[in-house]
Amino acid sequence: MNMNKAMTFALFLFPFLISACSSPTSPADSEPAPTEPAIERRPEQSEQSEQEALLFETSAGEEVDYLLYLPEALEAHEDWPMILYLHGSDGNGNNIEVVRPRSLPVWAAPEDLSQFIVVSPQLPRGNWNSYFEQVDELLAELMATLPVKAEAVFVTGYSNGGLGSWEYALHAPERLAGLAPVAGGPTGSTLAPVPDDICALTESAIWVFHGDADAAVPIERNTAAVAALAECGNESVQYTVYEGVNHGGTWPLAYADPALYAWMLEQVK
Image (cartoon, rainbow, N blue to C red; front, side, top):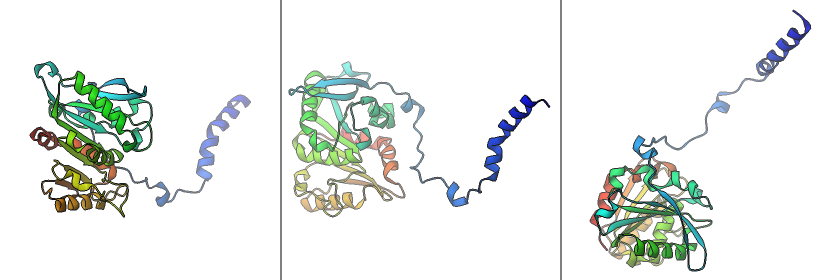
């Protein structure tokens, strides 16, 4: 073997020799970190491209990024129910494409959304309650320019958007036909999980979703809220608890459930 070939062969073997000399990996070290449940999208969901990325300018000159989902038969009717979807904190920013894979239409079957307009604004930073003025203006614009049924406007959201859904409903209960918070309680505190004005939702249609293995947002926050609403006189609140499901596993289950959209169609403000 000539010198050049010998050097090339030695260099080729060097990484493998180093690897063989290193200490073996213990079973504990090789154990993968816990992950969220693997819930696959349906093919028709992952291929959905009906959401259009748009920009709205408020009266104060502030730009609001949002996604808009319109039913195919939009022109066939004069008014359509509308869903306001509030994303979780991982959707915050100024790139609306970050919201798209985290949006409601990704998980809902097309046939379930065939009777709804869905608007998904992007929160630049912080919590949704700091952005309600902008959301109000966006909704007013859409209701003035699209065939929206004013008596059938809903709010839903996941995690920080679930918190935002509760807060938006308390901000404007007269505007909504119903709310469906997912894995987010009405306050950010387990010590004080029920807002003082919770009874403002006594007449509201509400469906709450939460996983009982949620370590990020303890289920006790929503359990306390549902109990408080019953004391206020709202005994029609629906509460779905997913056994053994953690924080990230809740929203695919909730938003893929056809019963949620059928329930919305039954509600009128």
